[in-house]
Image 1 (cartoon, rainbow, N blue to C red):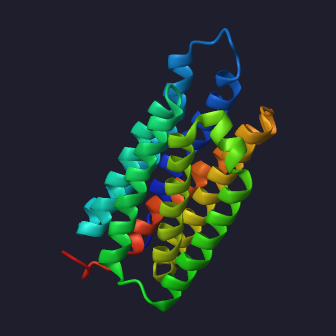
Image 2 (tube, rainbow, N blue to C red; image 1 turned 180 degrees about the vertical axis):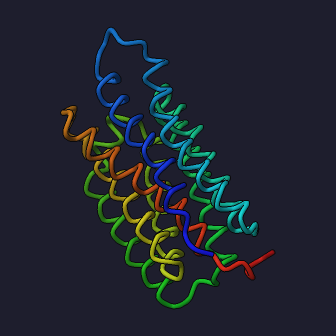
Length: 222
């Protein structure tokens, strides 16, 4: 079965459109916030719908987990606009679903463990360096929550080492987008270019994760 490039284009085009609409309207104070948030979540929903299409072509449990993770991210996108911390918790739930899909597809090996350990060390180092600033801005409990989220992303980054190249690329871009988003909050960066960069990486990541569904072996966990 060949990859459905035409269907990908049908779902990718509105992702680009909704991304542009969100960036251009979400920054305007007089524009209805609810409508801007709809643009943001609609883009992620398109990625989830494409993952569902690919899943139904040859259903397996890991594929359904990735599709469900994308749906959770849709809800997280919505909640993030109203409560950043609760939205982050939903994104963490989505990451857990991706981790489960990775484990069911291929048992993590030595390379996965090494990547996790290296990233764990990096997370604790950065957290130590910026702890006072983060705690002063978000409070102790939420600063610990950010550390736990970063550690979870480190686990996900380790698990995807044994996955197909699209899943690997998607997770890398997802983490990079989160890092730029965190930098934007820390440095109070609100430029249009920064919004386009973080959201462009994020939506590309979600679409790549959706595309990865097609390359999960049908024989895995039917």
